[in-house]
Length: 306
Ligand SMILES: *[C@@H]1O[C@H](CO)[C@@H](O)[C@H](O)[C@H]1NC(C)=O
Ligand SMILES: *[C@@H]1O[C@H](CO)[C@@H](O)[C@H](O)[C@H]1NC(C)=O
Image 1 (cartoon, rainbow, N blue to C red):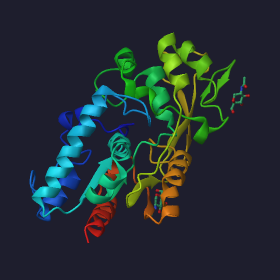
Image 2: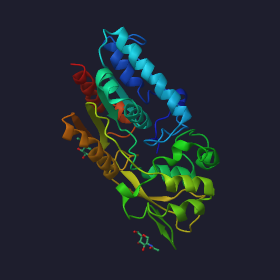
Image 3: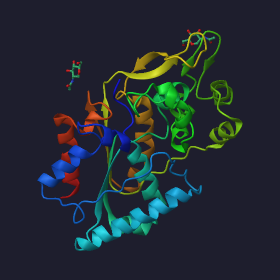
């Protein structure tokens, strides 16, 4: 399984284009130019964008910089509003950004938001397996278990745990003597060895999802086998688990994607366009790399620019 969260280190390490590299190339072929009509807003994936109404020093600084960037980009281009494009965790970050800005600012500066496989706040199972057994995607040559301790210090790792909102009472972690659902973090997290401070933080998190209130298109893969339960028979979390699969994009569980779509589509009640595009057989990372799905992503960006 090479397909998982898209983070900056992956771009550096890999010779094959990942993340938004191919999208950038396609945009450049169409005449977009870095620093003139095309801008990047890289973020630090260790940190968690704040939940609505909560403070975060790192993200306050980041959001302020993105706001400046958007204003400068608009100014350079006859004060036209911008199109924001984000993939994976970047989708969560940019949604946090948009919701952080005043409504009048959004209306003035954002023409369209394109979310490609954004990390659903309702969570996905992979977050849990990275916490239990370590991340399998950061550095392929290093056993995930060796990265586990470092991984657990990232605030972002706790942010998208499977939530009751999408996972309900279905067991996500199965052992011979006890099953755990999204309601059982009080028991599960200490069993994994996470300290009480972290457990308290997770339990105090309130999930609230605000639609961005700007025209938005959400694209996500579907029809790819995606882990939705893990089995640690003997209750030993230091071994790789057996996995039970369901539908999704290989990383994001489809029922969680649909729960997120439902929340975001609430902006249609205010007559603000929202569209969801499911792309068959597109995996979480390949959606912005493989020709057939990349073309759909490009079509959405170009249509937004009409
Ligand atoms: C745990 O879940 C599995 C699969 O849903 C089920 O077969 C098993 O009986 C459950 N075990 C316990 C202890 O509840
Ligand atoms: C998706 O993959 C399945 C299994 O390989 C295949 O049967 C189906 O035709 C594919 N669908 C599309 C739209 O490519």
